[in-house]
Length: 182
Image 1 (tube, one colour):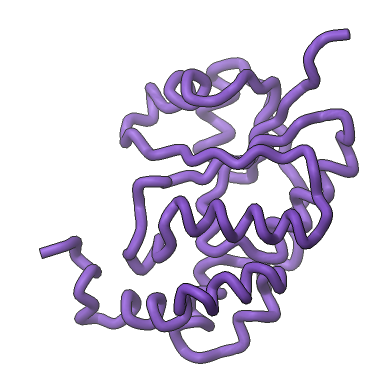
Image 2 (cartoon, rainbow, N blue to C red; image 1 turned 30 degrees about the horizontal axis):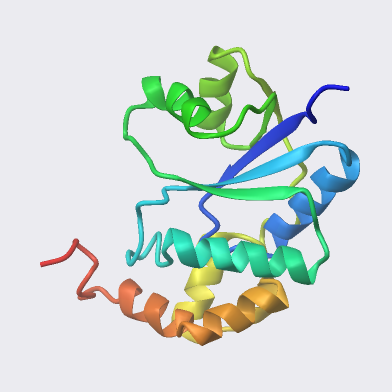
């Protein structure tokens, strides 16, 4: 018997929300014998309005949410950007263990992997109006009810790192990190 087939799902997970968890659950149920790699995209980005959380914090969010939801068979890896789309697929395949398919709804990610002849599958989306990172970060910045959109473990983790206060500070027009350090 050969090694298990692996699939790759890349996301920024800023933060890891209920839609992400639903997709992971779906993929694990649909393809129970397949290992799933969650690639934390833009891993080098943090403390900006679009990417407020570090790769390590995103790893913790995902790991805690999956443990709480009893989802197994998932590996979490950071994937820093290289800012060269023509080389990105080779970079990702060299960085990660072998995978046979990519799950994405991102048109550029789809195009790049299809050009490299990697199978690409569009996973289902779940309540995009509610589960969207930019919307959740907006709710965090404005004091809205963001906790309802993330798994309970993620809400607890974000509270422990004062995530909402960080997002609010980074979203301010005169935020110290808005245009980079210094």
